[in-house]
Structures are given as structure tokens and as C-alpha cells.
Image (cartoon, rainbow, N blue to C red; front, side):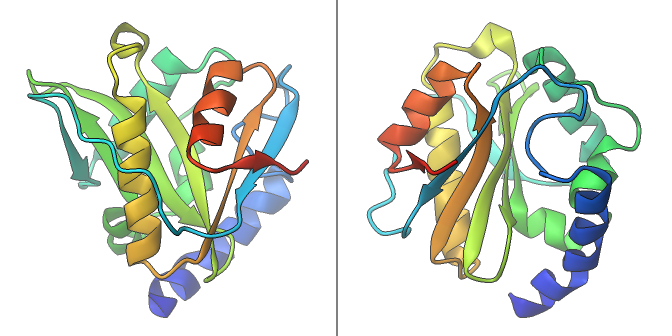
Length: 183
């Protein structure tokens, strides 16, 4: 786990200089940022996926899927060819360990979440998104269940995330997972 952390940390620091808060907001966003934290990963809620849906790990080429999902699901931000690498770097071993994709019964990639990190102790629930036509189908909770388990498996003991006040449904869901607003 420590080698995965060391491999990507310089990329994260470089991206943080370009985009100071490393939140889900672009520098030109109209969002009001909110930081949320969970003091430990104990008793992380577990929710099964509805029948036919699955979650898989990152595969080579998934940067295009990640961008397509966020372009459809995120009205507050814009994404370009460099967005994925600026947030996650290019180390595919790290991405396979940390990034998950939600797959519909027909094989379409419809959602994503990343178990990123701020430090070896603090994991980050990062860039959660599901395409709009699949909202309201009970998919966000299972996606968050998987990211919590991934953070635990990677040795993190606490979790944080960034969102915005303009996302009240997301804030309510994160609270159900034990997160509280800290800033």
C-alpha cells in the first residue's frame, strides 16, 4: 500500500498546485465547496447492487469512460482530455486498486467512484458520478459501499470527501454513510 501511495503522491501535489482545493469543482465553477469527513471506517454501510448491475475495477482505457460519465452527470464542471490524468496520474496499478466503475445489465459503463487518498491514513471518496438516466435506481449506495471497502482494504483508517452545497441529495447520502460537514 505504501508503494502505491508514494508512486502517485507527486502527481497529486502537482495537480493540487494547478487546482488548489482538489475538490470536485473546477476553478470556474459556481459551486459552494463543502468538505465532509468520517472519523473512522468502522461499520461502513453495506448495500448490495440491484440484480444485473456490477462493479469492476479500472481497466486500461477507462479514462474515456470516466470523462463521458462526468460530462453527462456533472453540470457544474467541465472536463477535457487532460482532466483524468491531472486528478489521478497515469499509474495503472494505482488506478486498478482504487478506481471502480458501475456497469449496467447491458454492459454500459454508467457510474464511477475512486478510493483516492490524502495520506496513508486518510482516504478520499473522490469523483462519485452516475449518469442521469440511472439516478433513483438504488445505485449510489452500493457504489459507496464498494469505495468504503476499498479504502479499508488499502489500509486507510479515516475518510474525507469534497462536494458542494448545490448537491443536497449527495450531502444527505454521505451523511447516511457517517460523513459530517467539516468546512
